[in-house]
Image (cartoon, rainbow, N blue to C red; front, top):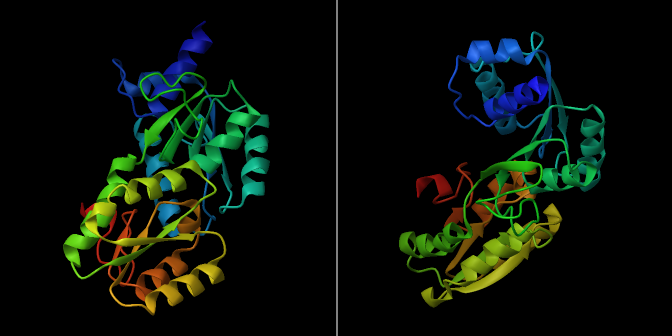
Length: 268
């Protein structure tokens, strides 16, 4: 029982929960712990490296130090479906105390690999629709975490696009139709069709095809661009820049501000 309690306290620390007793004492009683990390980007992503560094820093502040009482196993899937499944299986086989999973494509194969290893997710848009949790109030199972935003926010992107560029009558929406979040974000944007803007969906699959589709769209007048959140976008930062430059003004789902993008989500 003592081992189970210590494990729960360690997971609580990982989730950022405040405990009613000193962090140092908690870490000392926890012993050596193992954390698996499954990232959705490539290892050379500066954005993800910065976030991972903050994660390690937060654990250190909570008394968990790598090489002392903590071991971290990190895998980088680079947005590749096969890698997500391969690395999920690898991490579960290492018998970690908890796994940190970035975005839905990382969580799903981890849940397929284990229904007992605790999973803390980040960057997930629709955990209920994606089958990650039973409900937001009662997640159930072995996964819990943080929702990046609600679909209602996606509906605001078109409104903001019209506010900053009233002349826009056409908008291309970059979305990933292979995931529930991609479908949900586009549906939320469609719900604001009363703004009088004609919407065109561009699927996030092949970078060359996307650039061709955007270039074709940009040849028309009064166009704008909405970039929804997706693993593809996180793994193709150079393409995000060219997308935004090809059809401006634009509204983006993520805090980065590419050249030519008029308004990122963080400006809301």
